[in-house]
Amino acid sequence: MTPSHQQKPILLIALGGNTLIQEDQRGTIGEQLDNLRKTIRQIARLSAHYRIIITHGNGPQVGNLLLQQESCDQVPKLPLEILVAQTEGQIGYMIESTLDEELMTIGVNNKKLVTLITYVVVDQDDPAFQNPTKPIGPVFSGKEAKNLGYPTIKTKKGYRRVVASPNPVTIIEKREIRTLIDLDFIIICCGGGGIPVIRDGRGFHGVHAVIDKDLASACLAQEVNVDIFIITTDVAGAMIRYNQKDQTLLKQISVKEAEAYIRRGHFKAGSMLPKMTACTRFIHGGGKRAIITSTEALEEAVLNTDVGTQIVPEQSTPPV
Ligand code: ADP
Ligand code: MG
Image (cartoon, rainbow, N blue to C red; front, side, top):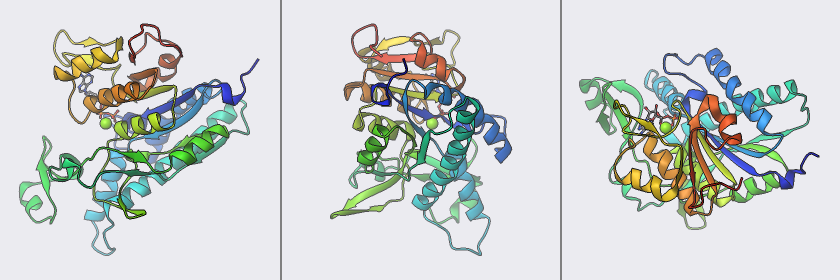
C-alpha cells in the first residue's frame, strides 16, 4: 500500500554546485540542464516515498551575473541581494522544469511543485560583517582590484571581491514551507543560501552578504522538522586527512565523533567545514540523520545507511 503523504518522511536535499556545473565545464545552459537531469531523476524516484524540500547553491551563477555587471556600464549595477534573488529564480526554474519532466517520465503527472523566493534573517551584529571572508565573482589583477571601489581578497586565482558570510538565524518563510509540505508540494527554496536580511522594526531589509547554503539548509531543516537532511557534493563524503595518502572516508558516525573531527581541523573552511557544521547543528536541533554524499549516490545514500558520511545521534542505527 502506498503511504499517504502525511506518513512519508520529509527529506531536505541541499544540492552542491556540481549538480549544475562540473569542474571542467564552462557552464553553458545545455551543460547545466544535462547535469541537473541526472540528479533530478533520482529525486523524482525518491518523491514516491518521501516529502521533499530542495535547496541549492548559486556560486558560479551569481559570479556570472557579477561579471556581466562588471563588463557593462550602460545599465545601473544591482546590489548583491538582487542578484541572489535572480539566481533563486533562474535555478528554481531549471530545477522545477527538469523535475516536472522527470516525474512525467516515470508516470507521475500531477505532482505539485513550487519555487519560493526565500529570505534568511541574519544578525546585524554578526562578527562576520567586521571580517568579510567569502570571495565572490570574477578574478582581477592586483592593479584592477585597487580601482574597484569595494573590498577584495587575494585568492589562489587572483583578487576577488570579498563579502561577509553571516550565520543564518531563521528562515522567514518557514511557516509557508511547512504548509506547502503538508499539502504535498515539492518545494525549491533557500537558493544560494537565501536572500540575507536584517530585522528593521517589524519589517526587514536586504544586506550586502551571502549566506552559506549548507548552513541555511540546516537552519531550515531544523525549523520545519525534516527527518533526513542530505547534502550532495562532488566527493563521496567527508574525509579525515583529506588529500593525504591515508585519507579516509567517514562512514556512519555520531554527532560527538563528528565534532571531534571538526575540532581537529580535518575539514576546510568554506567547503567541507560548513557541511559538517550544518549536519551537527541539525542533529543537535533534534534531527535523526544527516548525510553528506556524492551527487551520483544521492538516492543510494537515502536508501542505504552505509553510503557517504552519515551523522546520527548517539544510537548506532538511525530510525529512518
Ligand atoms: P559544494 O558546491 O558541493 O558545496 P564545495 O567545493 O563547497 O562544493 O565542497 C566540496 C569540496 O570540499 C570537495 O570538492 C573537496 O575538495 C573539499 N573538501 C575540503 N575538505 C574536505 C574533507 N575533509 N573531505 C572531503 N572533501 C573536502
Ligand atoms: Mg560549497
